Image 1: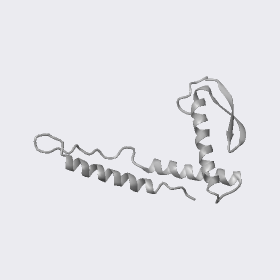
Image 2: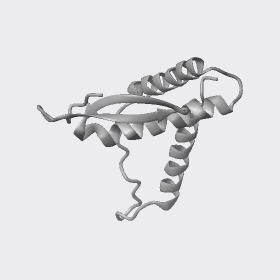
Image 3: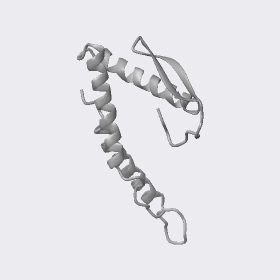
Image 4: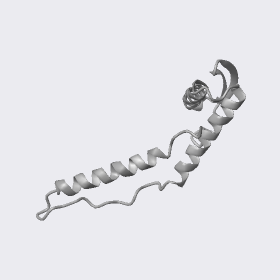
Length: 124
């Protein structure tokens, strides 16, 4: 596992990890240990969710489905705009915040979030 934050010459360490009950030895830079352990926990959780869904059996198939789900999420995230267009604050005459307009915008944002999240279901 390599990230841009790795320091040149940083020593590698070997970790014993466990995913779905199977043990693996992996190497990473010392400064990446925490990130790798977070990734292991995340992947293990995702694979258990797929397994517990009962539709897919076999560690290889579960791993492929987890990889597809994660790749799909990554690609969707990359396609999403980094920052939504800035919305100026809703101001009433005199400079006070317009409460009704602010509520309307919050409701619109919540609807947009809900719509985006509804497309995030697993591919299964």
